[in-house]
Length: 126
Length: 413
Image 1 (cartoon, rainbow over the protein chains, first blue to last red):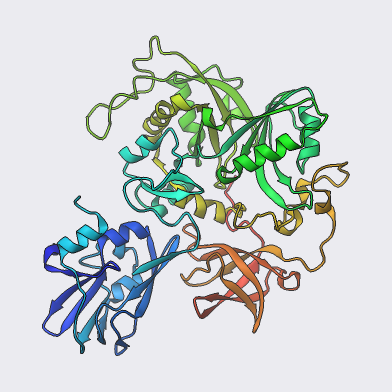
Image 2: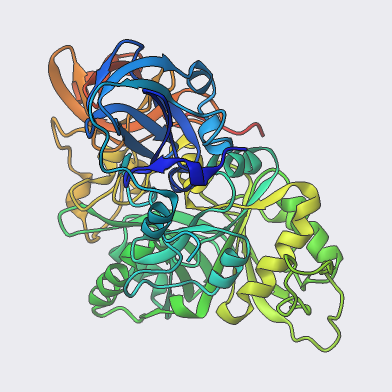
């Protein structure tokens, strides 16, 4: 089980796990709940240069379309093929099986939230 | 991640209604069941309880229970009720037998659609008109304005009624059990004899269901228990619905809504009944090719464009909206679209024939039952022929799609 307190977050509901210069990115359980059943994910290919704050993909649920923003600047080094094959993993396992991409960070990382700040934002735990 | 939604049913956030949203008598039931809510046409409505797709499949394979108390109930009474509705609406309502239902529309004087309606003839001189939630006031006002010399009255009684839809292949079995248990009594006819688009009177006897919370205790309400002394309340059972499945819509006094909801859920659970929200309702109706007001229907659309010209009898006399009978050369017409893959076209997306824009999607989703994208769209008549190949502009990507005739899904009889 992932320790959600060890993760960082964005106000756009991505979570980020950092290991050396590579970050793993997913979307939070809160976001997955709000979306409803995820039926399609469109993720950047390995090798894509992503830029913090810019769109890097899309997540479609039965009734909505969401843009996925890159929380950091860098190069995509791995994409979770399991989520492409079974997008429902985003709902069932947002912090474990449904990580989305790994990015090798090349720029400065700023503006991320800790768990307490993220919960304050979503009203969770209040 | 930011969410852009294609319509008002998609959202759902926070733990309470914002501003002055209307609530149904079942709000506490939905909260108890863990529903996600959304603002739908000014109402605080359950969008899902567990999963949109699971609720959708339950309705196709077993049954789903929907709170649709946001719909408007407008009574039209009087010796001229039938003749008045013939004039005020697009259909011939005077020809509807007592105990039968009819789909119709109320049109603007120019023929545009103010709302689509289901009407039940309760008596020779009494009709129940079901309007969409957001249009209820408009419909009541338009009807009242049209009374003129007719001997008829129009009253909006929406706040007095709750409306629960029990939809799915096992719906009739669940109601049979509620009858066997004594929760539903005094049916005008056996359920099996209530045909599609027909209705019957009955009574519902609330049990001691409103007090216990099944989520908190081991106690399960058994239909029929603790019923001694409980008063029976009128119940209208109509074999109508909006999902493409067999099913019933049940009208009951608002104060008895929670008891009826719990009775049906408890009776139906062993048969696979689940509470179902607006998200499932929307994908179900889309698969069944049913138009939704505000998407496929509006004051700018005449019935023939929506493929619903048949609701106006050819030899109809004077009625409000008579221009709806006239041909409108070149007007866009409603079609179905199917595509491969998992990427759905959604409301507002443009359609192309080669490089020429030829129409726009009004509703679209990845069909849970069929496993591929389906959509309803208005297109130029030149590309409306089934089999025509078009492309959908899905946020900058062109996805091939084929024109088809709705419905996309038809239940096996």
